[in-house]
Image (tube, rainbow, N blue to C red; front, side, top):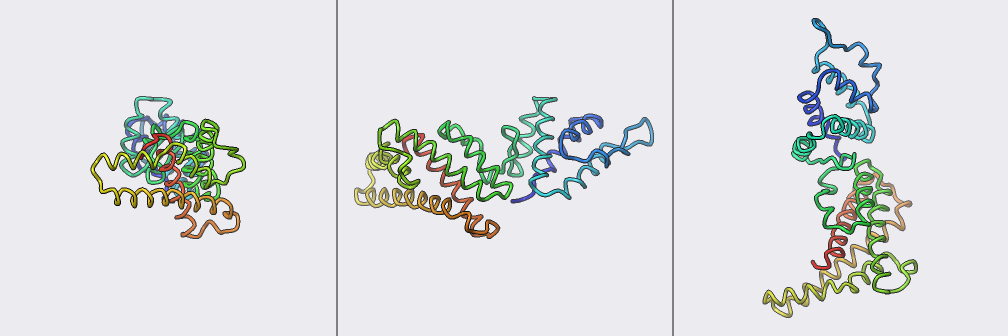
Length: 261
Protein backbone atom coordinates (compact mmCIF):
# COMPACT_ATOMS: atom_id res chain seq x y z
CA UNK A 1 0.00 0.00 0.00
CA UNK A 2 1.21 3.49 -0.84
CA UNK A 3 2.54 5.77 1.86
CA UNK A 4 0.15 7.66 4.10
CA UNK A 5 -0.63 11.15 2.68
CA UNK A 6 1.28 13.16 5.24
CA UNK A 7 1.82 16.09 2.84
CA UNK A 8 -1.77 17.46 2.85
CA UNK A 9 -2.02 16.95 6.61
CA UNK A 10 1.28 18.74 7.13
CA UNK A 11 0.19 21.66 4.96
CA UNK A 12 -3.05 21.99 6.92
CA UNK A 13 -1.11 21.96 10.19
CA UNK A 14 1.18 24.69 8.88
CA UNK A 15 -1.58 26.97 7.61
CA UNK A 16 -4.21 26.49 10.31
CA UNK A 17 -2.30 26.01 13.58
CA UNK A 18 0.29 27.80 15.65
CA UNK A 19 3.74 26.47 16.50
CA UNK A 20 2.56 25.47 19.98
CA UNK A 21 -0.61 23.83 18.68
CA UNK A 22 1.37 21.74 16.22
CA UNK A 23 3.57 20.46 19.04
CA UNK A 24 0.52 19.67 21.16
CA UNK A 25 -1.22 17.86 18.28
CA UNK A 26 1.70 15.61 17.35
CA UNK A 27 2.33 15.00 21.06
CA UNK A 28 -0.80 12.83 21.12
CA UNK A 29 0.60 10.62 18.35
CA UNK A 30 3.56 8.26 18.20
CA UNK A 31 6.06 11.03 17.49
CA UNK A 32 9.13 11.00 19.77
CA UNK A 33 8.84 14.41 21.43
CA UNK A 34 12.36 14.25 22.84
CA UNK A 35 13.61 14.73 19.26
CA UNK A 36 11.64 17.98 19.13
CA UNK A 37 12.72 19.24 22.54
CA UNK A 38 15.30 21.65 21.13
CA UNK A 39 12.78 23.29 18.83
CA UNK A 40 11.16 26.21 20.61
CA UNK A 41 9.57 29.35 19.28
CA UNK A 42 11.14 32.53 20.59
CA UNK A 43 10.79 36.25 19.95
CA UNK A 44 14.06 36.09 18.03
CA UNK A 45 16.35 33.29 16.93
CA UNK A 46 13.89 30.50 17.73
CA UNK A 47 12.64 27.65 15.55
CA UNK A 48 10.03 28.22 12.87
CA UNK A 49 6.94 26.15 12.11
CA UNK A 50 8.68 24.96 8.96
CA UNK A 51 11.66 23.67 10.98
CA UNK A 52 9.36 21.96 13.47
CA UNK A 53 7.39 20.22 10.73
CA UNK A 54 10.59 19.20 8.94
CA UNK A 55 11.73 17.43 12.12
CA UNK A 56 8.34 15.69 12.29
CA UNK A 57 8.63 14.79 8.58
CA UNK A 58 11.91 13.02 9.29
CA UNK A 59 10.38 10.83 11.98
CA UNK A 60 7.32 9.93 9.90
CA UNK A 61 9.54 9.10 6.95
CA UNK A 62 11.37 6.52 9.07
CA UNK A 63 8.19 4.80 10.31
CA UNK A 64 6.59 1.64 8.90
CA UNK A 65 3.39 2.49 6.97
CA UNK A 66 1.09 1.15 9.71
CA UNK A 67 2.72 3.31 12.38
CA UNK A 68 2.77 6.36 10.11
CA UNK A 69 -0.94 5.83 9.43
CA UNK A 70 -1.67 5.86 13.14
CA UNK A 71 0.30 9.09 13.65
CA UNK A 72 -1.42 10.79 10.71
CA UNK A 73 -4.89 9.67 11.81
CA UNK A 74 -4.34 10.92 15.37
CA UNK A 75 -3.14 14.25 14.01
CA UNK A 76 -6.31 14.55 11.90
CA UNK A 77 -8.45 13.65 14.89
CA UNK A 78 -6.76 16.25 17.11
CA UNK A 79 -6.96 18.90 14.39
CA UNK A 80 -10.72 18.39 14.12
CA UNK A 81 -11.13 18.31 17.89
CA UNK A 82 -9.62 21.78 18.02
CA UNK A 83 -11.43 23.07 14.94
CA UNK A 84 -14.31 20.94 13.67
CA UNK A 85 -14.84 23.34 10.77
CA UNK A 86 -11.69 21.90 9.22
CA UNK A 87 -13.51 18.69 8.27
CA UNK A 88 -14.35 19.99 4.78
CA UNK A 89 -10.82 21.30 4.26
CA UNK A 90 -9.27 17.98 5.29
CA UNK A 91 -11.69 16.06 3.11
CA UNK A 92 -10.83 18.30 0.15
CA UNK A 93 -7.05 18.07 0.43
CA UNK A 94 -7.01 14.35 1.22
CA UNK A 95 -9.41 13.38 -1.58
CA UNK A 96 -7.24 15.18 -4.09
CA UNK A 97 -4.50 12.63 -3.39
CA UNK A 98 -6.85 9.63 -3.15
CA UNK A 99 -7.43 9.43 0.60
CA UNK A 100 -10.21 10.13 3.11
CA UNK A 101 -10.51 10.53 6.87
CA UNK A 102 -13.47 8.67 8.35
CA UNK A 103 -14.23 7.61 11.94
CA UNK A 104 -10.68 8.44 13.02
CA UNK A 105 -9.12 6.40 10.25
CA UNK A 106 -7.27 7.27 7.06
CA UNK A 107 -8.57 5.09 4.23
CA UNK A 108 -7.47 5.02 0.57
CA UNK A 109 -10.44 5.84 -1.69
CA UNK A 110 -9.12 3.23 -4.13
CA UNK A 111 -9.69 0.56 -1.49
CA UNK A 112 -13.06 1.77 -0.24
CA UNK A 113 -14.89 5.06 -0.75
CA UNK A 114 -16.83 5.92 2.41
CA UNK A 115 -19.37 7.78 0.26
CA UNK A 116 -20.68 4.32 -0.62
CA UNK A 117 -21.68 3.57 2.98
CA UNK A 118 -25.24 4.84 2.52
CA UNK A 119 -25.76 2.16 -0.15
CA UNK A 120 -24.67 -0.68 2.12
CA UNK A 121 -26.53 -2.69 4.77
CA UNK A 122 -26.01 -1.08 8.16
CA UNK A 123 -24.84 -4.30 9.81
CA UNK A 124 -22.08 -4.72 7.21
CA UNK A 125 -20.42 -1.29 7.22
CA UNK A 126 -18.21 -1.82 10.27
CA UNK A 127 -16.70 -5.00 8.88
CA UNK A 128 -16.17 -3.46 5.45
CA UNK A 129 -14.36 -0.50 7.00
CA UNK A 130 -12.23 -2.92 9.01
CA UNK A 131 -11.38 -4.73 5.79
CA UNK A 132 -10.26 -1.51 4.12
CA UNK A 133 -8.11 -0.50 7.10
CA UNK A 134 -6.51 -3.93 7.36
CA UNK A 135 -5.77 -3.98 3.64
CA UNK A 136 -4.20 -0.53 3.98
CA UNK A 137 -1.97 -1.90 6.74
CA UNK A 138 -0.96 -5.00 4.75
CA UNK A 139 -2.98 -7.45 6.86
CA UNK A 140 -4.33 -9.50 3.94
CA UNK A 141 -5.76 -12.31 6.06
CA UNK A 142 -7.59 -9.87 8.31
CA UNK A 143 -8.82 -7.82 5.34
CA UNK A 144 -10.28 -10.89 3.68
CA UNK A 145 -11.89 -12.13 6.88
CA UNK A 146 -13.61 -8.78 7.44
CA UNK A 147 -14.79 -8.55 3.82
CA UNK A 148 -16.36 -12.00 4.19
CA UNK A 149 -17.79 -11.13 7.62
CA UNK A 150 -19.59 -8.14 6.08
CA UNK A 151 -21.39 -10.47 3.67
CA UNK A 152 -21.92 -13.11 6.35
CA UNK A 153 -23.87 -10.72 8.59
CA UNK A 154 -26.06 -9.53 5.73
CA UNK A 155 -26.81 -12.94 4.26
CA UNK A 156 -27.55 -14.32 7.73
CA UNK A 157 -30.14 -11.57 8.21
CA UNK A 158 -31.71 -12.45 4.85
CA UNK A 159 -31.74 -16.17 5.73
CA UNK A 160 -33.63 -15.45 8.94
CA UNK A 161 -36.02 -12.93 7.41
CA UNK A 162 -37.02 -15.20 4.52
CA UNK A 163 -36.76 -18.44 6.50
CA UNK A 164 -34.38 -19.92 3.94
CA UNK A 165 -32.76 -22.37 6.35
CA UNK A 166 -29.99 -22.56 8.92
CA UNK A 167 -27.30 -20.05 7.90
CA UNK A 168 -24.82 -21.80 10.17
CA UNK A 169 -24.99 -24.94 8.03
CA UNK A 170 -24.65 -23.20 4.66
CA UNK A 171 -21.37 -22.42 2.92
CA UNK A 172 -20.39 -18.83 2.25
CA UNK A 173 -21.08 -19.25 -1.46
CA UNK A 174 -24.44 -20.90 -0.82
CA UNK A 175 -25.53 -18.09 1.51
CA UNK A 176 -24.75 -15.46 -1.12
CA UNK A 177 -26.50 -17.41 -3.89
CA UNK A 178 -29.64 -18.17 -1.90
CA UNK A 179 -29.85 -14.60 -0.58
CA UNK A 180 -29.77 -13.27 -4.14
CA UNK A 181 -32.48 -15.78 -5.08
CA UNK A 182 -34.64 -14.89 -2.07
CA UNK A 183 -34.58 -11.21 -3.03
CA UNK A 184 -35.25 -12.11 -6.67
CA UNK A 185 -32.40 -9.86 -7.77
CA UNK A 186 -31.88 -11.44 -11.18
CA UNK A 187 -35.61 -11.80 -11.86
CA UNK A 188 -36.15 -8.09 -11.18
CA UNK A 189 -33.25 -7.16 -13.41
CA UNK A 190 -34.69 -9.37 -16.14
CA UNK A 191 -37.96 -7.45 -15.97
CA UNK A 192 -36.24 -4.06 -16.02
CA UNK A 193 -34.17 -4.92 -19.07
CA UNK A 194 -37.21 -6.22 -20.91
CA UNK A 195 -39.00 -2.96 -20.05
CA UNK A 196 -36.11 -1.19 -21.80
CA UNK A 197 -36.91 -3.26 -24.92
CA UNK A 198 -33.82 -5.44 -24.73
CA UNK A 199 -33.92 -8.53 -26.91
CA UNK A 200 -35.29 -11.48 -24.92
CA UNK A 201 -32.38 -13.77 -25.80
CA UNK A 202 -29.87 -11.06 -24.89
CA UNK A 203 -31.58 -10.46 -21.54
CA UNK A 204 -31.49 -14.15 -20.73
CA UNK A 205 -27.79 -14.51 -21.58
CA UNK A 206 -26.87 -11.30 -19.79
CA UNK A 207 -28.68 -12.26 -16.58
CA UNK A 208 -27.24 -15.77 -16.63
CA UNK A 209 -23.72 -14.40 -16.94
CA UNK A 210 -24.24 -11.79 -14.21
CA UNK A 211 -25.68 -14.39 -11.86
CA UNK A 212 -22.71 -16.62 -12.64
CA UNK A 213 -20.30 -13.77 -11.93
CA UNK A 214 -21.85 -13.20 -8.50
CA UNK A 215 -21.66 -16.90 -7.74
CA UNK A 216 -18.04 -17.16 -8.88
CA UNK A 217 -17.01 -14.11 -6.84
CA UNK A 218 -18.51 -15.71 -3.74
CA UNK A 219 -16.67 -18.96 -4.53
CA UNK A 220 -13.31 -17.16 -4.85
CA UNK A 221 -13.86 -15.38 -1.52
CA UNK A 222 -14.88 -18.64 0.13
CA UNK A 223 -11.79 -20.47 -1.08
CA UNK A 224 -9.43 -17.65 -0.18
CA UNK A 225 -10.85 -17.44 3.33
CA UNK A 226 -10.57 -21.20 3.81
CA UNK A 227 -6.97 -21.37 2.60
CA UNK A 228 -5.51 -17.97 3.36
CA UNK A 229 -3.43 -19.33 6.22
CA UNK A 230 -1.62 -21.60 3.77
CA UNK A 231 -0.36 -18.85 1.46
CA UNK A 232 2.17 -16.07 1.74
CA UNK A 233 0.25 -12.80 1.77
CA UNK A 234 3.19 -10.83 0.45
CA UNK A 235 2.80 -12.32 -3.02
CA UNK A 236 1.37 -9.67 -5.38
CA UNK A 237 -1.21 -12.02 -6.90
CA UNK A 238 -2.66 -12.81 -3.45
CA UNK A 239 -2.75 -9.13 -2.48
CA UNK A 240 -4.62 -8.36 -5.70
CA UNK A 241 -7.17 -11.10 -5.02
CA UNK A 242 -7.81 -9.78 -1.51
CA UNK A 243 -8.24 -6.28 -2.93
CA UNK A 244 -10.71 -7.65 -5.49
CA UNK A 245 -12.54 -9.54 -2.75
CA UNK A 246 -13.20 -6.32 -0.87
CA UNK A 247 -14.60 -4.81 -4.07
CA UNK A 248 -16.75 -7.88 -4.72
CA UNK A 249 -18.03 -7.75 -1.17
CA UNK A 250 -19.03 -4.09 -1.53
CA UNK A 251 -20.72 -4.80 -4.88
CA UNK A 252 -22.70 -7.77 -3.55
CA UNK A 253 -23.68 -5.83 -0.44
CA UNK A 254 -25.02 -2.94 -2.52
CA UNK A 255 -27.05 -5.36 -4.60
CA UNK A 256 -28.43 -7.14 -1.54
CA UNK A 257 -29.22 -3.86 0.19
CA UNK A 258 -30.92 -2.09 -2.71
CA UNK A 259 -32.53 -5.29 -3.97
CA UNK A 260 -31.98 -4.15 -7.53
CA UNK A 261 -28.90 -4.01 -9.76
